[in-house]
Length: 356
Image 1 (cartoon, rainbow, N blue to C red):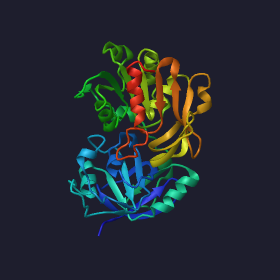
Image 2: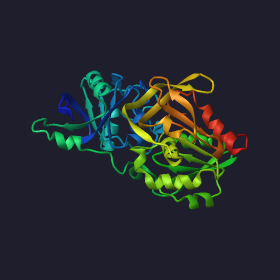
Image 3: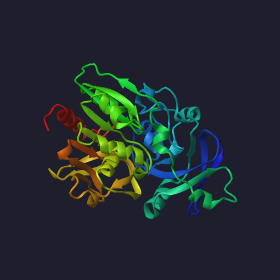
Image 4: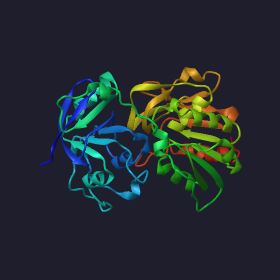
């Protein structure tokens, strides 16, 4: 029988569960994701750095771990919480169990807790910090409340430049790595882009020396407004070459253009987020993972809002036609899906080819 363990919320609620994965105690920002699949991609998405990730779908681990599906080389989550784990996965591509993967990655796992009740608390009161511990007595609530995700982008970005070539080379793209998911590179590669992956703190002048056809601003973790140096470098790139931003890259581009961001009550995390195109009125189902959003009103006269979230009307995309730049809050590269918005990569390709 697995050892008992406790999740202690900063609001004082305590939930009993059972350990799997790595041992130890940890404090993190507890968030939930509603995806029914794609847990491998979730575990290896650098955007979850510093967060305790809880799955609302009740059974996780059915198809085990498949290294080919990982979005990065390791897991960046602080801990992983599920209602029920599968110890005997069944899939012809399976390489190991979820439990074995978490142990190897040093990630604490908790199963057997009432994830539905915890989700209801977060939806009502907002994202909460939490402590995972064997001993729920004499908990220091103030210490839990004081936790902050810090140095997030620096902690997940590439340390040195790397090149991912395409078999059908047409364009050269610089990807500024703020915590990039691997599928962004794959989507660019299959469209004929050689991708130069550059660390988050690369100077604008060094990027322009590479003479790129386009610049991609990647996803990543943390509060976008904290990345002041990165924002200043983006300002120097705007208008020089086509720019495409995704998730954190979308937020950083908005900040560089004079916009503002705000923290959402409980964020958008999952593979079923509806986004509406303001140009066509069509709604797409998207994959998302973010706790901050661009304030639409802050971009009046600076950019044109292109997509909004159909649930809460928050900003999901911005166009900057004058500067050949655009961005989206959701993930058009989503893997394992949905793939409704993959066409947005084609827009970037067209822009680099001079069609926009």
